Image (tube, rainbow, N blue to C red; front, side):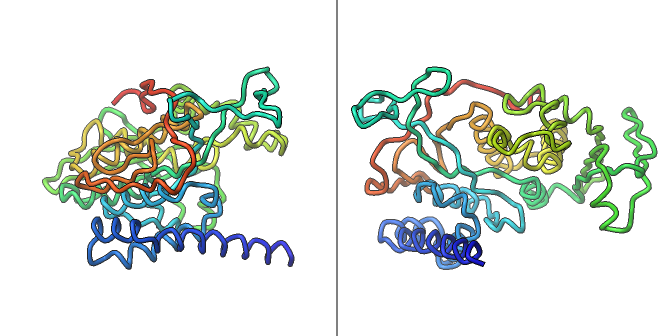
Amino acid sequence: MNNNISGQKSLANVQAKFSVFMSQDNAKDLVNTAIGKDAQRFTASIISAVATNPALAECTNHTILSAALLGESLKLSPSPQLGHFYMVPFDATVKDANGNIVYLTDASGNKLTDSNGRWIKKTVKNAVFVLGYKGYIQLAIRSGYYKNINVLEVKDGEFISYNPFTEEFSARWYMDHNKRKEAKTVGYVALFEYLNGFRKLIYWTKEQMMIHADTYSKAFSAEALKRLEAGEVPEKEMYKYSSFWYKDFDGMAKKTMLRQLISKWGIMSTELQTAFERDDMALDAQDKGGFISFEGEHTTMDDDTVVIPGGTDIGFTDMAEDNVTDEEKEEFDFFGEQ
């Protein structure tokens, strides 16, 4: 009972804190400029999304707004229930005014070290836009080229056959939703069909997907996932399994299937290209265990500035004590063959 009350108070505090931020004149002016007549609806939806996600409590407010504005520019909903996109906390390395990395220190000013004797960097949490697989479907359908597009897990006992040359796929689907949900996933199938009749289908086994993730994601290990699914990972080591591949393997797998399908054979609208690029940055950031700044037309997170679609920037210099930048910008193609 007490834990429930404490949790409710915590969520209420998060909502109140962000509501105060959104009521500031510079925040309201930014939203009104970017959203226009739908500003009130946007503000209500983002406050609601923040209130239902305690993980955002530690994030800087201006990065939450930046992530939400990017989603809004793509006409996607921030509702976690819809799964269009997510505002995900990432650690950002703090740097001083001269661009030097700031390290944690003790009361005497000595730098603190970790178990390996390395200095511990000071970090702050920023919210980052991460596209969900349902967001890909929404953007593809909205482009006007696709008559049909879908992706689905294939459960144990459903698969019959697949011919990769003719792309003929056969399955015996479970009609019982609960039975499907409880059954073991053995593969993934994705397809699209244009209005003109052109059709493309791909099928991957789960083992193939695990090899793909193991190859292209630095933060994921197929063997580690097997240990996690078998319940062999101690609670104290769960922090090591923060990758999206561990948290929602099926969701990431379906997203990968759509990316492989659309990026190789699909027509991509400007909105879909933008979503691909921003999602790449977020996944790259997590793989590096750090943060990458999103600079460009929609958002920038390397300082206390929010850039709205169209290029206008409004500063929030009162929202943080330190400038936050990405430590490095090494290129890494998460999805490999594209």
